[in-house]
Length: 150
Image (cartoon, rainbow, N blue to C red; front, side, top):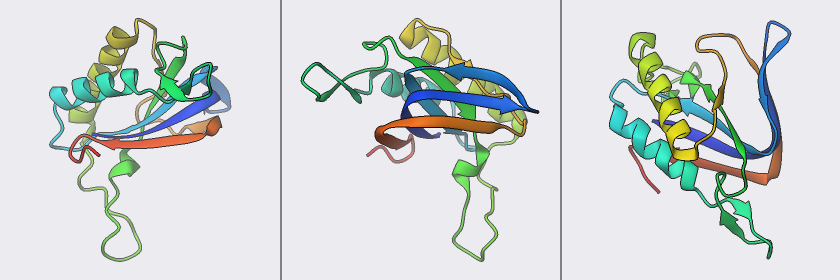
């Protein structure tokens, strides 16, 4: 599983001209699921994201988690995070999980985040054409890949 995590002042998903979901201060998580990902990947990633200390404390040091600042989370599925661009100019998405595998893992990831944070997780709509808007706070953007923890 691969996630792009952005600390945001606000973020939203619009589908067919209508706001589908939105958050204020918190995290926008773009989530890509690979064919060889498992529920263990979802659980580990949700735990890491919920505890990631990327919000500033009273001294201006990034020392607080989304839970500690009472922030919200908006999670959007994004198979293009697994684009292979090694050959040619047209990305290949062969490593991205097919919907029958990706949807249950995406839903499991969201449930894990809800359990970790104790808050409702806002989402995009799987397989929909979405307009994602955000105001990046910082900017702070973190990339996590469960196959390559750094």
